[in-house]
Length: 78
Ligand code: FES
Image (cartoon, rainbow, N blue to C red):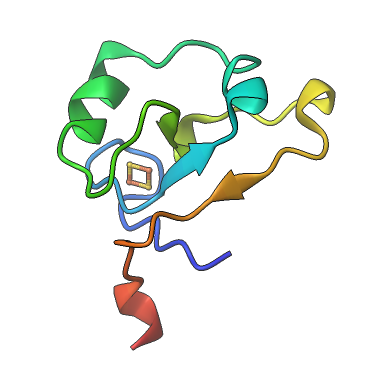
């Protein structure tokens, strides 16, 4: 997955921003206010955007698909 995750889950970067299909988005716990604030700063935010570092993977989410926004750039790859 070409995601940078610069802050390693501290909600200080938004480089882990992903977009989900509505059916998967609806299965997640609601985003915290802090996550919403960080998403406000992310490029290419859409209705079903989340910070992937805040998604707790459970068996119920087995098979989840996420999309990396076209605006995303992984600075660790260059
Ligand atoms: S890794 Fe920085 S907010 Fe998710």
